[in-house]
Image (cartoon, rainbow, N blue to C red; front, side, top):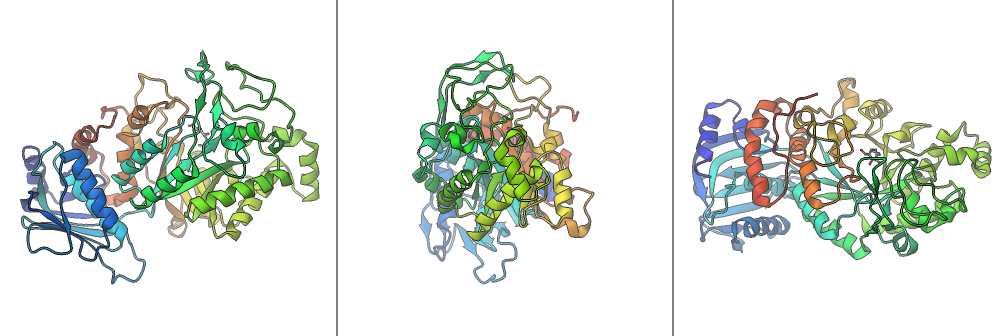
Amino acid sequence: MRKLLPSFFILASLSAYSQHSLPIIPAPVKAQVRTGYFTISPQTVIVDRNGGEKATVEFFNAYLEKYYGFTLPVQKKADKNYISFSTKTFVKAPGNRERYTLTVTPANIHITGDGHAGTFYGLQTLLQLLPVQKTTSPDIPAVAIDDYPRFAYRGAMLDVSRHFFDAAYVKKFIDLLALHKINTFHWHLTDDQGWRIEIKKYPGLTEVGSCRNGSITGRYPGTGNDGQEHCGYYTQEQVKEIVQYASDRFITVIPEIELPGHSSAAIAAYPQLSCFPDEPTRPAPGTAWHGDTTRKNVQQAWGVFEDVYCPSEYTFNFLQDVLDEVITLFPSKYIHIGGDECPKDAWKRSAFCQKLIKENNLKDEHELQSYFIQRIEKYLNGKGRAIIGWDEILEGGLAANATVMSWRGEKGGIEAAKQKHDVIMAPNSYVYLDYSQRKNDDSVTIGGYLPLQKVYSFNPIPKELSADEQHYILGAQANLWSEYILYPSKVEYMIFPRLTALSEVFWSPLKHKNWESFKKRIPVQFKRYELWGVHYYPGLNEPMK
Ligand code: TNX
């Protein structure tokens, strides 16, 4: 690091934008480079004066141990050679609990958060000042940093339905988010291809719904079917553990229980959830199927399927029971209820649905979808929770307190903000990390083209919004759909470095966003990925279009 740092820091001290020259991503709000280094030695101690920073201190020692091979003792006080973590408990107003200052001098290091989350983010910045090579006496350059996020909601979604990732990997994924100051993990737990969360009242969801008999191979519609079982789910104990693990990293986990569409896996377990319980599941046209086709089945191809939840009392009771268990596991304010891509074919030909539409004076099946979502919203609001839905929940009228996650570009987000609803921006044009990041990717992806520079150019605040309307944009999110992502190494290849670019979009002030500066900092980040042992795509010069 001594070798690597000087060029950065000489540049830094000469530059008016020293935060650009420090190899820190996301770029901090204010950063000043000072002279000298603090060197961690065997005598260095961690100071946690009030014992209030346990989670942060443990994260620090775990990181040191894993990547540098040593840990530091933790004490209540020390006179010299210390790294101190503290939180301003006297800051009463909520303000920005994610703000922190980090001061490194040759003598000591102080990290002070406005809230415990801030202290944790101060640590994340400190970790980026450590050398990217393993050493037992790391030098840390002297700096003074004052930093806070641009957006309160900074999210990343992992789809564990299309392909299952085990609890240990979910924890690793959460660690990777924490290292990027991301504070929300959106867990896409149910879909047509697998139900992944244990629900005690409905054991069939995991006994039947968590397994499919095969998967299409190659890009949709595919070249065949692998004929292999693909199974997996999280027990409630594992879910609790993961939620706690995330919370120790100041990350809120938002579960997504998809409705009314993308529900084939639940229907395979409980056919009465469909308006046509006796009709067998139809494979997607042109795709290869493995095994039984005479009954309801978990889907084996990707896409959108016509067999969806029937808006019957049986279904509402089922969903309320499921959500009851979900809310005991997830303390998050929000529950994501999906709402996307729900074909209306089944509802159109169901006498039950047509009667329901008439009885409730609904105009059409889109209003029936709103009726569905609004009932679920009322139920969850009654339990003190708020819903997030994909932008399709705008069609047929928005539920009263719903937050919209805008994925089909920015349109839905703009529309929702104009209707004075909160919005999370996740436009596929900028944040769909399942899209290819190079013109000729060497493994199958869903397609599309989303190079690093395009991702970096994303601004979650659409220019169409007035200053007042902009306040409805809570933040933004990266989405990783896993149709073509079979292994953790591919997860990492797809998210890095694009998620790192997004972390700067989510956190740094707009005035610090600068592609050239980012490109200068990213090679250090590549070394850091290597230190972490994660995969990444090393290209930096893919064309924008
Ligand atoms: C659309 S984004 C979907 C997902 C797919 C994804 C693939 C959204 C709400 N629905 O079901 O996995 O495209 O990019």
